Each structure stands twice: as structure tokens, then as C-alpha cells.
Length: 110
Image (cartoon, rainbow, N blue to C red):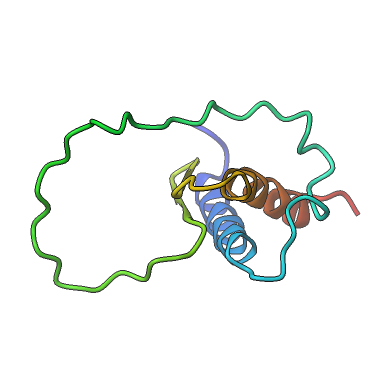
């Protein structure tokens, strides 16, 4: 196993929370305020479901989740996942750059 997995879990939760705040901040312009390595980091390809993809009927929820305008990131162990509706070019740019900017802000060299 990795050294200090509990410490990384705490750090990755903080990074993900910050990424969510950045992602949905109405005054953030992802075209001008970006991580230094945002153009060089190879992120996984965006997965877009076919319009004809059938969905199973969901069961009723006992809570009303908060729906964010641009999406949400979440973390499980050491995997940060980003989910959003790609209804325009800005949405995808925001999703991809929010996590990179959060990582840079938290882990930048002093």
C-alpha cells in the first residue's frame, strides 16, 4: 500500500471541495484563470452517452440533492470524478480546469 493513505484522503477531500467551489463560482473565467499545466496535462477523454441510451426508472429519493449549474466533482479514495452536463463549450472547460486549478492552488511549490 501507499504511505500515509489517510493523510492523502484528507488532502483529496479538501482539493475536491475547492474544485467544486471554483467550478460553480459565477465570476470564475476558466479561459483566463487556469492552472499553469492545464494545456499540458492529458486528461481522460470526455464520455458522452448516445442520445438513444435508455435509462432505468429511478427510485424515489428521500433527500433533495443540490443541483449545481456546471457540475460536481467527488472523490473516492484517490480517484476524483467530474460529472456535468456538457450543453456548451464552457461547461467542459470549467469541468476539466476546476480540478487542475484546485490541485495547483493546494499543492503549488512555495
